[in-house]
Length: 522
Image (tube, rainbow, N blue to C red; front, top):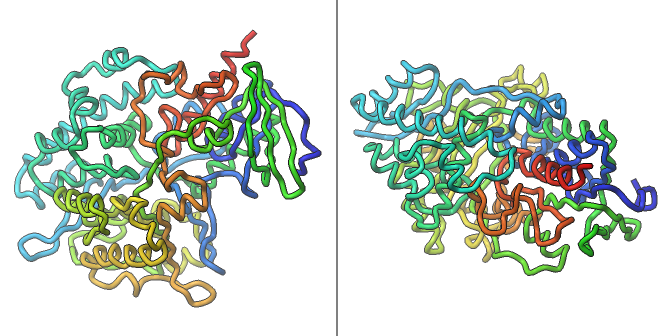
């Protein structure tokens, strides 16, 4: 679509065609509002896309974001999305060597199997009983907190009443999560498995006084009211394709290749100046919703930018000819890789990796976790690959802040990837390199992305997958009624940097749409 084909004004202009922007567009268009979505790239989806990264290989991978937990079924139902997720029967497997022999902890496959796995690793019942009590507590919190994400922001005291569990409130909202982990668990490996949910894309120690690790942990255990992390059938692009279809079907106009460069507002409405390959254009609107980072919002409006954000993860996509054999022969690789496969994520290992990275060095034992999408959902692979037994692997590395890559992104990426795969190889009966597929040009099917790569490719500030540190899901100074408000009454933030943003949820998009509909009711 060319700039001159657009109308001069709309009820709402949405800057950014990522999943949150598409959610907002679909809600507003279904409510009868005229909606324009301006997307800088030649496609919608942002970080929630599926691509074929390997030349000549029929494998469509979730290239950036890859699992779904925080997307409320309310949004799926409201928008009539043709999208579904598939649960995983195995939650996680964590290999370790103890007493000179390979072993590990398999969580999932039924209560009795999990109980036996804990006993096998720890030699008794204590850790499993503690696990049951702890996750029973987080499950109750999830059931109470998750439904509030698509409602006006509660106050802190109101959310505390909703949680209605002082022990849980203290453990999750007031004290560093490391206190709760150390109070409840004795085994180093079990402690590490629990802590990992507090460190996804978040560079923090277990005892960080800022509690940003607690906020990360909270969002990772409340999804869907259960904390389950599900596989998007067809890949993450299936979600954004469904959202784009829902928005278009409701009448929204989606203009790709249109980059917003300025937002002007007079307190009664706003105008968005955008750039295309053919020149510039302007679209006026009663409301502008920005599905981008707070930094980008500030640049568009000319406001003082917020504090810099920093990402802290390595993302690796792989295609294998077969799953590798494990040193721990008691576990089937098809189960070990079906859930989250934790690598170098013992509690002390995580602390050591954080300390090294905080000192400016790459961790000598980089922590990471892997899962195999194609074991749960083989539809992302072409029939020929499925028949031959090919599988995907997605790796997410922790404690690798963007600052470590600033001196030489390419060289540090290569060093980190080598060190990360060496940690995995230590638990395999064969090198991972022997299992990698090759593309049409004979190159191994593996790609890695650092925070700086994500900043360049997706505009994520500092490569931060949440756009900024995650927020508490309650009101604070300046949060507004829905957590999407900005200093400009007709400009809203509907991206991951909104309050209750982060992850693939659609929540900020839903909440920004609700704020617009409230403001224009009647």
